[in-house]
Length: 40
Image 1 (cartoon, rainbow, N blue to C red):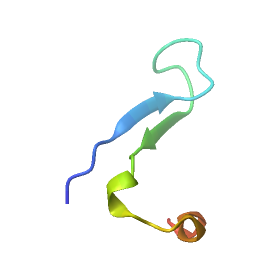
Image 2 (tube, helix red, strand yellow):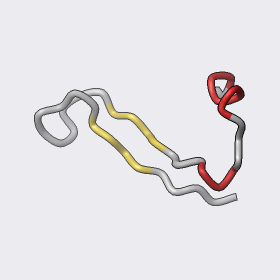
Image 3 (tube, one colour):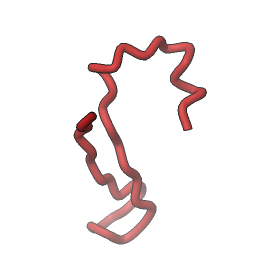
């Protein structure tokens, strides 16, 4: 399975300065909202 991934510099004033976070949009997977907190 291929997923798009975006790298976000959270709480940063400049690129690559602080907390890097990976974000993968999951709309296509149709995961129920109640199951989202259980993803690890």
